[in-house]
Image 1 (cartoon, rainbow, N blue to C red):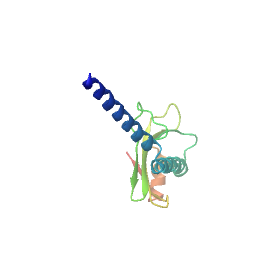
Image 2 (image 1 turned 90 degrees about the vertical axis):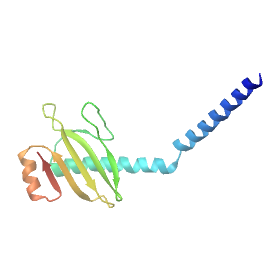
Image 3 (image 1 turned 180 degrees about the vertical axis):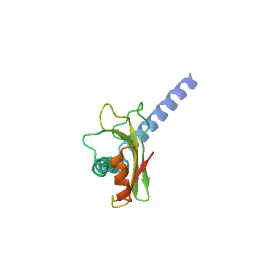
Image 4 (image 1 turned 90 degrees about the horizontal axis):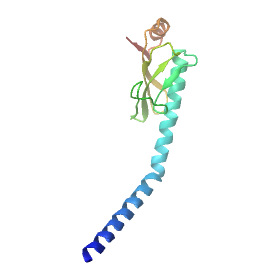
Length: 135
């Protein structure tokens, strides 16, 4: 009988401890602020990709819009800036093209890499040293 009561007390104590830890983890303002900064970085990366690559109405898969069947997408902190990877396509008939955008602390573009064989993008890469087209 005493063993059973001890098990109940132990179970309740562990449950309360886990609940307390989960509440503090979820409501941590630093974690929420980090998430907000990540979302802002991804939204900015979308705008940079559309602007620099001259895309009109692309379909984009990124950390805010993941689709595992297309591929994995990431966002990493990088010396105060961000590295955002994803995929885009111009329309339903186009293949998915990978991209990587690297920004610095002030959200300036350091590098944009795209895996696309579009001749217009190749010409853009010739003129813009921050833009790189991968075969």
